[in-house]
Length: 94
Ligand SMILES: [Zn+2]
Image (cartoon, rainbow, N blue to C red; front, side, top):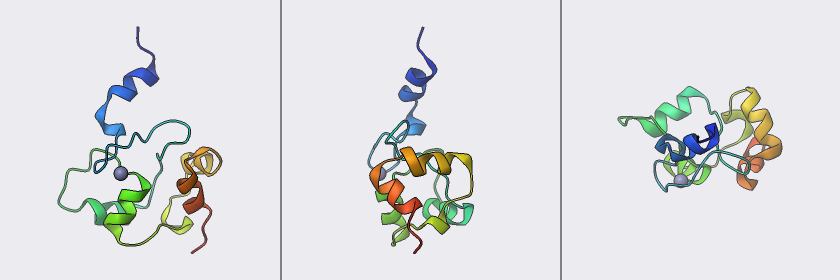
């Protein structure tokens, strides 16, 4: 019987919409940004999915900073355990 993680890994929603980067797990890029940012980068698209940091920044046209992320437990955890560039953005003041 597959574990929860194995089932999640087979589910396409955990892959970046643009580059197929796998966003879940330690060192991954699973995070929450404010709705306004998410709507802006997914406007006119189905947004059942994820974007890695690089692709979200590409769509947004600028780098993310700590202020773009919501104040949720997931982001606090990723500040310690996310990918190098996710940790960098979560700790970047501007
Ligand atoms: Zn990507």
